[in-house]
Length: 261
Image (cartoon, one colour):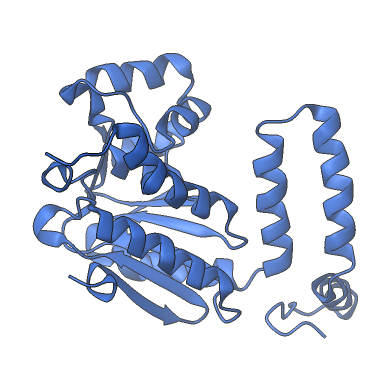
């Protein structure tokens, strides 16, 4: 399969949807899919018409994790494989200057769970379930799970989920803060698109700087975060979006952040 086959790309109303397309394998990841998704994210980041990126899966799964058949027998260490595939992908999501929505339409297992957690916004279908399945084959969670999950649910619950490989269903995921919304399966794609379009109508530069500030603050001191906020606020204040927001407030109208005045 080619890049175009394993990750489907569609753009509508400023929303770039990237669909993992190995439905017969529950979108289990092989090298081709991981490289294609990273390339598609970078292309979305460079496209000024794209304001929000959605990652979802074809068929009944989001991503079942690593396709073990794709790595068995290869002369490559675990470290080399992660550094060549998953780690660049997760870094690309986190460093992209646009909101990334992970739209989890079914099972998200192993590295697929890590991918699901890496989004700025996580939207789940009612049938979604997240499983940190690594311990089942005597491996540790990777692709960012050890960073994302304890920050969301705390160390102890994260360890339990990783040690026992217990599935988290949609309603529990919502209560635990693993996702922001749960939508019915039958309307999931339409609900995700509507949510993404709401996000696309927000000020793109301000959201990019907000993402940058949050990423920085997660691993900084308060003093460093305050300094970073001050520097980034200047960039936000100097952007035409800010002038449009102020003008709209004064004129008692809705701001048009897609074409700032």
